Structures are given as structure tokens and as C-alpha cells.
Image (cartoon, rainbow over all chains, first blue to last red):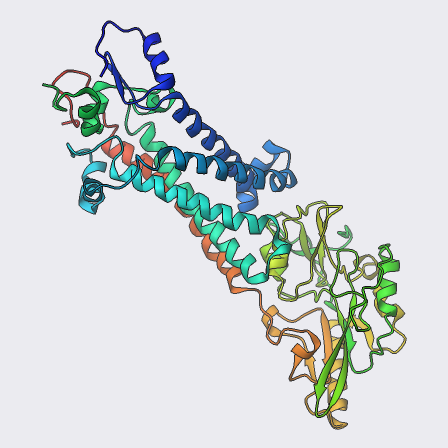
Length: 232
Length: 292
């Protein structure tokens, strides 16, 4: 716990390069620089895979192909973008998996009625730590998804080296995983931006306000500041 | 190659407007009588010559067969099969090539608009200018026909000599056949000829002789007379070829469902934002919590 005051934003930014889970004045560092860089590297390769894959997925998105130099370029780029996406996802797994282990309170968080109350903003859950049950589930779901996309993607990359049954199974696996993955990412982006103001800065500047932490992650707030989440 | 003069009936990865003409052309077909094939391979040579494909050295595999399987630069291959039969051996020959299915699995699986087309006359053709070499067509093909060419990065297969057929000539393989076991004409004529030949064979004691024109792919542009029609697998032909169900599910169920799910998730997020609004954090000490 760091309490010296006053703090300038430069102090916070400097601290956020190397440390996280520390409070500086009215702000708390949630993601240090390496965490944020890793997240955006994965995101970059995800979007490159998405833009190169969508025109191959359906001609409805054929208009995207010229952005990368045509459909043949998409076919060439997509496997490499996907490979880099899988590799950086592995780095992401190593970086975060300890924080993402499900605890009993996370399982309680994931019950349907409590998820509904979360979405209706009527919930106050003092036990939510740095990541809530939904975030943890999302983490493991996308990691599993990345694995599925990688395994099936390798087969689709070199179709002539695999038997027909494996090829066809891979087409279906790639398709289903892609659909679920993309739906999950849509909600991830929504919850990280418009739905919860103050959240996006955690992945750009690296910091959140104390108030944000008290509301969304009270147990994490207590652990970082030593204060009660009620703020008294 | 695509023939500009031929109208297109179906085109891969088309959402709308794939049919390009009004003319009704008769559907063409090759007739192959495996009982009169002598394995001379004149058709193989004619195919290589007419299509300006390179000379492919024979791979010795202990049979008369030129290559173990089709190649991106070898679209027509006589397969030699030795089948044990009643204490002896039946020496079976069959011309392996694209079957030009009426309902082509390659075309169904292809993701590149216009890379595989079916002309009004039934010929199924790869258009290299549109092909991206992904190989999905191979997964859709029940006959294992399209081949990837490493140099061009495209798929290649028999064109049914569409360039010859479109100017009124018969395919090169037909032209070269010395026994008449290969013939060319409209599908109706070739089926009638094959049925007559099957009757003749049955009368001569080959009671299992049959015509191979599998309904699972809507019939093929190659009608084959088999002496042992009850065992097409002896000739290396699938007994009941179909466009794989998985390809159908993929294109007809998963694709629309996926579009619905992805667009739906964006709509759902927006609807949630409108009904529940952002979860604001009021930055006043002691007054934190959900919006009241």
C-alpha cells in the first residue's frame, strides 16, 4: 500500500509500468505495462485473424478481403495470423492462469440468478476479487477456444496431409469454435467499454479509480488498500 | 479455365445472381465402358497433350498404373485393380477423373466466389483466377479428385475439355480412345447407350453388370458401365457417394446460425445498454454502488 500524496498522473503512469495491484492517490494500478501489452498483442492478432477469416467464412464479408489485398492474400495471411494469435494466447495463459483459478465464491457468482442480477446492475457482492466468476470463465473459455482453433486450423492449413475424416471434423470444429469465440469477444468488448465506464482505462493506462474498484471488485479493493469496500 | 462463352448455372460462394444465362443447353456426359477398356492409356496421353501438361514419369508400384493417384498435372488416370474372383483374378480397369457431379460437393464446399462453376451443360470447372487454393473442395468431393498445385497455389482437375466441348468438339480422351469404350454426347444419350450395353452384358452372363451414375450426387457427368456393378468398390468407386453431410450442415446450418449468433450478440449488447444503461461509479466517497 502506497499512501504518499499528492500524486501526479506521471507518478501513476511510471508505477503502472512495472507494478500492479497498488493504490496511488485516488487511483489503483490494475494492469501493469506487460499485462496490457500482452492483451493488445493478442487482440491485434485476433483482429487480423478475424478480418482475414471472415471473407473466407462467407461472401457476405467479401468486402473485407481487399483490405488485406484480396481473398488469396487472406488465405495466405490467415494461418500465420492465427498461429501468432495462438502463440500469444499461450503467453497470456501463462501470464494469467493463476489469477483466474475459480474459487467457491466465483462458482456462486456464476449461478444464473446472480448473473442476471449482475446484468441488471442490482448486485453488490463483497466477495468479488480482482476478477469475477464471469471473467474467469471467459478466460478459460477463450483459452480452450484458441486451442480448438489452433488444432483445427493446422489441419485446414495443410488439408492434403490429413485424411478426409480429420479434414471434415476440423472444418466443423473451426466453425463452431469461431462462432462461440466471436460471440464471447463481442460481450467482452461491450463489458470492457460501454457497459462499465472506467473499465477501458484499466487496459490502456492501466489504472482504475478507487470508486471503480470498490464497486466492481470489492475484495480486490480491500486487499490492495486495506480499507473496507464501503469506503468508511 | 472458365469459358466466357458458356453460361453458368451454379457458382461457388454465391449469395445471389449466380445463374448467368437463359439458354437451356443439353447436359453432356462421358460414357465409359470398363468392359472394353484395354488399358492402353491413350486417353492419359491425349489429356496431357491437349491440356499442355508436362510429361509425368511413371511411378512403378507393381502394376500397370501410371501413378498411384491423380495429380495437379495429371487429371486422367487409368486405375488397374486385380480382384480375386471365383478362384481366378478379374483384371479391372477404370478411368479415374472428375465425375462432373450434377450436385458437386466441391462447389458446395468452396469459399471463393466463382472459383468453382457449373456451366449450363453440366461441366464443373475450377477457375484459377478466383481459386485461393484452400483445398476445401477436396473435403467436399466424395471421389477424391481435386489436387493442389504447389507452383500456382491453385486446385486443378479435369475440365471435361470445356474448351473443346464449347466449340463442338469431343474431349481429348474420347477422341483418342481406340476401342470405343469412351464416348461422348448428351447425358440422356450416354445413359441410354450404357443401359443398352448393361443389358447386353447381362445377356452374356455378367448378371451383375450395372450402370454407375450415383443418385447421391444427383448423377454424374461420367456414366460408367461396370461388369461387376454390385461391387463398385472393386473399381475404386464409392458404393454410395454423397456430398458429406458435414459439408451440408456446415454451409446450411452452422453458417446462418453463426451469422445470427454474432450479429445477435451485438444487438443483445446494444439492447442491454439501452435497457440497463452503463453501470456508473459515482466518484463520491461513501456513495458508491449500483445506480439506484
